[in-house]
Length: 181
Ligand SMILES: CC(C)(COP(=O)(O)OP(=O)(O)OC[C@H]1O[C@@H](n2cnc3c(N)ncnc32)[C@H](O)[C@@H]1OP(=O)(O)O)[C@@H](O)C(=O)NCCC(=O)NCCS
Image 1: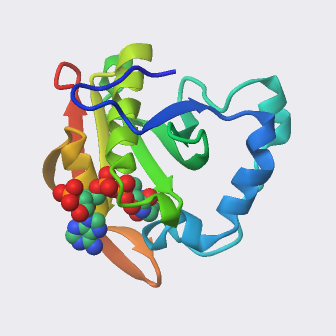
Image 2: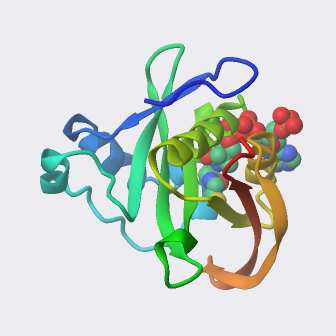
């Protein structure tokens, strides 16, 4: 679905979610270790909308999700997702806010870097968006490094922005602009 980024061939590819993935995604969503501590907001996970999946992939003009698949063995190892964020009343001021979760055993091999670089390329190719942003906890060093290696630029800190694990947390904001990939 997405082409290779500059440099080494990526170790992962991105593909649409299909109905065959529904059970797997439900299992991941029900397992806090699969999404990682920084994505654990408590509560029970919503089941995947199988009727929506029967109609087509999980993406529309406002948000979407893709499976991250390891090239070496074709195994699904996580997901990337995005949603629209408005910075003005006009369509041109819509940015994409992206997120990622890899299975614990797939972390630390550069796959998060590749997946986020591929997602940025995919969104620039398939939409008119000028800005792709990501926010992560100030303590999530792996995600910060991974974003930086994927070409995102650190912009600053959004103080007390996220309520998780019983407290408000500061988030670091990153972005990549069209033409910077
Ligand atoms: C965050 C995540 C996507 C990163 O992907 P990844 O494949 O594990 O990361 P990469 O291998 O591409 O790069 C990780 C980098 O961070 C570094 N790193 C990892 N853990 C670290 C830590 N605890 N302290 C310092 N550096 C760390 C690695 O050394 C590597 O940098 P390097 O190549 O310069 O050595 C992945 O770990 C994940 O899915 N985590 C759980 C979910 C999550 O936190 N998602 C983001 C929420 S906003």
